[in-house]
Amino acid sequence: MRSFTRRTARKFALAGAATATGLLLTACGSDDGASGMDHSGPSASATASTAAPSAPSATPSGPSAPPASGAPASGDFNDADVMFAQMMIPHHEQALEMAGLAAGRAEDPEVRKLVAAIERAQDPEIQKMKGWLKGWGRPESAGHGSGGHGMAGMMSEQDMKDLAALKGRAFDRKFAELMIAHHDGAVAMAKDEQNNGRNATAKALADDVVRTQSAEVAALKKILARL
Image (spheres, rainbow, N blue to C red):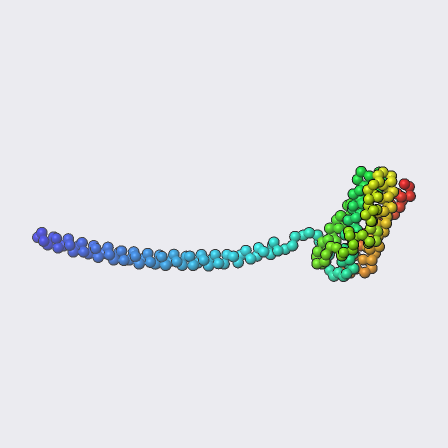
């Protein structure tokens, strides 16, 4: 009876071991399956990481766009338009230099008023013309001597020194004389652009130069007559 019990217990033990072994094998099989799914995970993430760089490809279009540094003159242009801008830039720059000398030297209120008008108008026009030349792919300077000397109405270095040495009424008189000649030169260049230029924006600026500077010449002549 006691031996029968031992045999029975042994059978149950063997059966339990077999069952445990089967369960263990099943678990191992399920682990392999899980690890297979994990491998598929990295491949999907690798695909995503490979595709990810394609998104930033739209970004370069932003930085590559040139910053707005002055509105380009749209439309066709010719050599006369280019020459007008290249010559008028140093011409305007000298007018601003002359106007700058008025600080602490000019006495007449009408002279001071004209100086302020010149500064308001000509600096923005310089920036416009530089923007045109950049848009046209042309240099700002055409090599017309040092600082544009030799162009119509341009002052010599000695003229500028003489003007800087004056004050009060003497300065006002000399300033009016020199600026009349300077404006006359600008008006002549602007009229050439009106006749020979092609670009509508450049021709419009030439119209403004003729109108405003002709009016300033008339005002300067009146000032000169009473000084």
